[in-house]
Image (cartoon, rainbow, N blue to C red; front, side, top):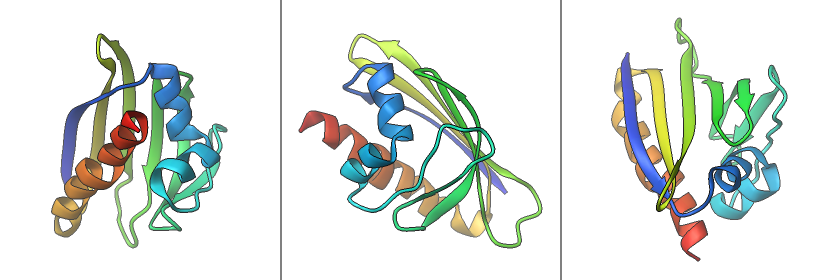
Length: 126
């Protein structure tokens, strides 16, 4: 199991980024795929037509999102924590993803960088 941590700069306010990560209609706009999302702790979510599924654990509007991502047969929970900090360029996003299966690590790093956050940055850069 591996952990991944990285910072990203998004050209939008923390409240706008929070909304983009938690509102299913906005998620569909920047991912191009259907999404199921709620800001209710304990609710299940799905993004990219079910490619990513899990459970929502904690929300602090405009500040933090904590989710458990599901992997088949994994004994330890894989936790994604996204913290949003105001930055002169918009929002500094602190991502921490724990317990990524070794065989999936490179794919997940690529996904975070190129599919998830690049898509979000492109969405705000228009």
